[in-house]
Length: 339
Ligand SMILES: [Zn+2]
Image (cartoon, rainbow, N blue to C red):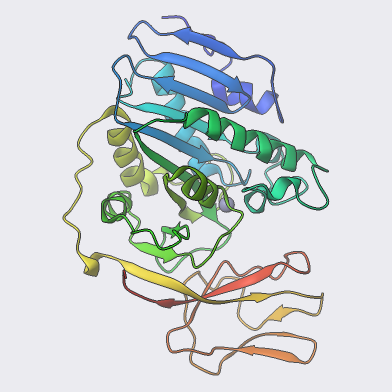
């Protein structure tokens, strides 16, 4: 029954080693599941019988987003304790343990803007988040070995700063004209996610990296509002837990037939950037994601520039007036259908 994470569980090991660890592991459990630890927060499970998928579940890329961290931590411990036997190779990534420890989104820089090589662009690998993002890319690369014909999946699990009109939503990375997967949308629906934002261009998020570089079915999955450790209402995560668990063990995910009417699909209409400290919003801090305003409504201003609602049904996503100058302050979206 023994494995190295009985005295100190994997989450505690991860939080005790904030940026990296030389304590790699390689062992096989009695049930035949092979386990490798490649770094702090990086653990891979290989089933005794070869599966058809290579699955990555990542969380804690923003350290204060505790719900997904608790979900993944529970899966890891259940797999180690042989309460679950995986049917597919699966890697868990806990992105930013140092920011988990201080209960903040990040230490020095938002890690979910550092993928697809952005970590090494100007000004270079100048902080630990950039170094960690580069390592996470290398672990994804190692996991999705070359010449694999397996279906690749990467769900990067988050919670949002604000509530959402639809509590859970996913961002579908830009596919460069490739077809959207209806089966993946059915899986999202089974996870309790019926609102999908179709991204309109390359980004430096973790999910776009896996989608674009490895052809993975990848999503940034927002599972609700940020709360401190221990304060999550875990009943809100039952559907996502059960669906992901079924995926991991090869059980029935209980997918419904695809129906367009089950989903709220949005596409990006435009992004509004903050250039200087005079930037301000004219809606309250508790206005939730996907709230729409009437055409002409003054949304924000910066100096003598006003930003107004341009399109019928135009709604806000990820508004943040506190971003650094030069960054996106809000994404403006409108409803759409699958092409
Ligand atoms: Zn996040």
